[in-house]
Image 1 (tube, rainbow, N blue to C red):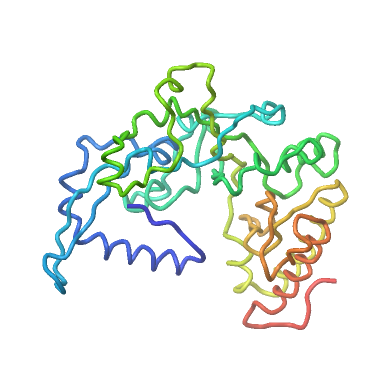
Image 2 (spheres, rainbow, N blue to C red):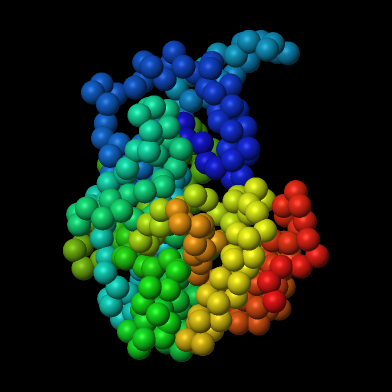
Length: 341
């Protein structure tokens, strides 16, 4: 069972408590079903494509609070939606970006406690063949750059690379930088998932088989593309947390420095013709030296920080900066009227 963090750390703690409570009736069955020896859980591939075993419970009698857990089966691949978006045409822009597969990316445990393994709690740090540490970000279909990129508007991370090569902005500007994209081939990652018969889909899984599954002849055809853009790796920023987490317990001097630093960073970005996009405190990291970093440059907007009419524009960035400065003035237990210029 995996706990997915939504919102702040308190939400994550509540989610874990709920997971442990719900898991209790199934523990005996889970122990019986556990593979021996345990499978690999060291690679991004293991995290993304592990088999999903479905356990259910029914009441032993009407109005009874006693439940009987049972193993329904392995979720068939027709009922699973792999992460990412299919690459129907391998565009020139993607050819220019370094890529790796999920089998080449190792997970880095941040605790000796097995229950805190990233396989269960979600990913933070990963490491590739070059032994450098990166942050992995998934691309669900609604966030995939494949849906938004045009010849007139290249991917923001390509824009950043081109701008830095032209020496605007600085090469050491404090914002997240792309290392590579993660591209998987369904021939290599999906065939080990169980494929249910049509009868099983209808009877056992309620006809829940509407997701993409390739025909046998497509798997057999080496010229048929099954590649998916799964996610990306950005250079890891050792950090204390986001501005949203750190600022409320920070003094005025730090908040003032972050406000002016934010203005300077966004100004430098705009001078280079770039746009931050989703301006808000949770998209700013505070590193170990208390410096501010821009992250999440893939666009969109968050109501309350940027108006929809200003999304993905320099005007929206400036609106977000002003609202972040207003928030920095008020978020501490010692609020002030304004902060910065």
